[in-house]
Length: 208
Image (cartoon, rainbow, N blue to C red; front, side, top):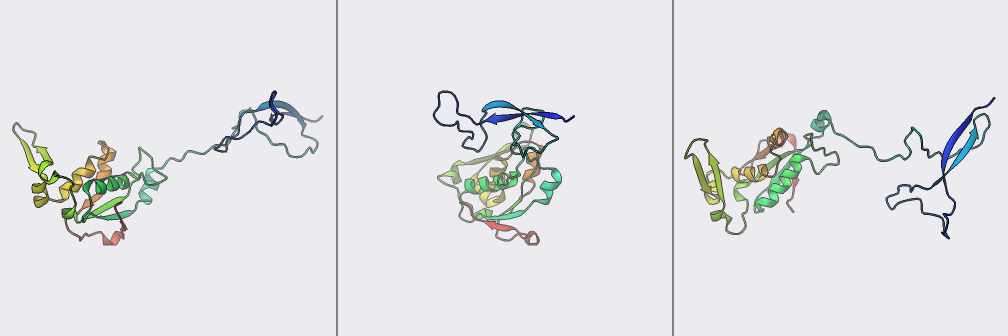
């Protein structure tokens, strides 16, 4: 006594009212649902290969698998980049740095995992502010006590601590969470052209 299996196969016949066979693929390469027919196959006898696209407990259509990065794989894939801010617009430098810190330039980007790289910004004192921001842009900080608000123009901040111009611009583009704080700690900003990260062999990036 031989066993009999049941398979559902897509029927390639011409649909009623159509002159040509129905297209069975989307533009993305996915199969279209078609008319099904029931086929009985006797396993005890060789009957040749039967393309099985089933309505069963198995996966009917093989799709793309979802990749999810882990903390270990993200730590191993971390790289170092260096950005020269000499004559570059502050916003352009900050957006590039924020994108690298979050890891959005990688195919393995995962929103809840720190997949970003380390970023070194040099020549922060020569970063460019467009328009009249040197005199109009104000940096504020508060001590937490009454009357503890301090305000400084961008020109004064550039003279006292130019690294703050880049640091605050990048910090404003990162998530305000513990994950964002971890990304921000991988940003290294220096006022001049020298930096102590030559051992990490950072790759130089040009600002678009």
